[in-house]
Length: 249
Image (cartoon, rainbow, N blue to C red):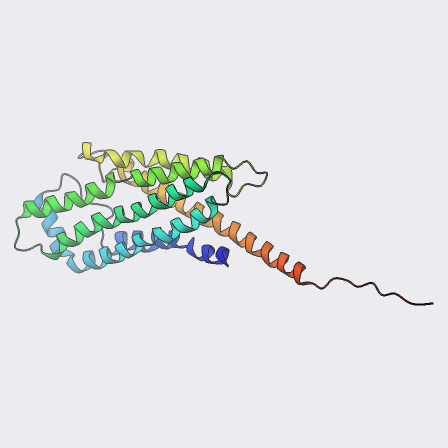
């Protein structure tokens, strides 16, 4: 039964991507983001011209961010099957919960920014908008710890048929490298490493999406296999033993 629950929970990772990224991109219109060099008046116009869409998109994005928690629970369920990886499973789970909060926090800042654009100075709105983007981009370290914990747990699994394939460990390590530029956007207001740059935003984002998709598909397949094996074992144990009859001559 636990495997069936985890098989449902693991899809919350892809659900997070669809809801959060879809709302962030297509409703709020925050991707592509405003440039760090945008003027305060341009930031105010952004919130004034798209007030309802931004508010709706941010509410949906916050909902999507919360889906990281059940996703992390499903991953921990698999890591705990590995000998010596229970502590790493706990690190992964706590880091994923923190990551959810770290997505929610900047979204809350942007919500507050959109709530009352008129009646405050453009410079204050600009500062709130900047705060949201800096928080959103730079708090990658919980994800980084989560990725490292997962990779190490996969590599310590020495059984002939590992719980998770080793290539997934290498993908986690590679993703932990790809997201690093996002943590440096504080030092750049333009170029590749700014919060609207290829290295600052898009490469980490693509790496994150590929990683979540891969984890979801692989763990779903593993759980489906376990469920099938459990059903087959149950049928074998429930089958009545064969009786050999005897005849008297």
